[in-house]
Image (tube, rainbow, N blue to C red):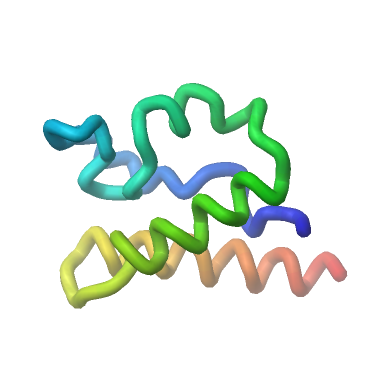
Length: 79
């Protein structure tokens, strides 16, 4: 499965004590290796972060969901 976007970054990189970005939910390692991951691995990360960081009503969750939906629309238009 092709991932919906190259990366889920919303340009707010701030890591917690467990080295997880507070904005997008990826680990430092995932961010570092993103280009090397397979499409399935990227999609699995997207699924996880949408559940963990894309829920809620705050600014960051909304930005993450909007990025995902925008990429999905763009992908459908190409198909």
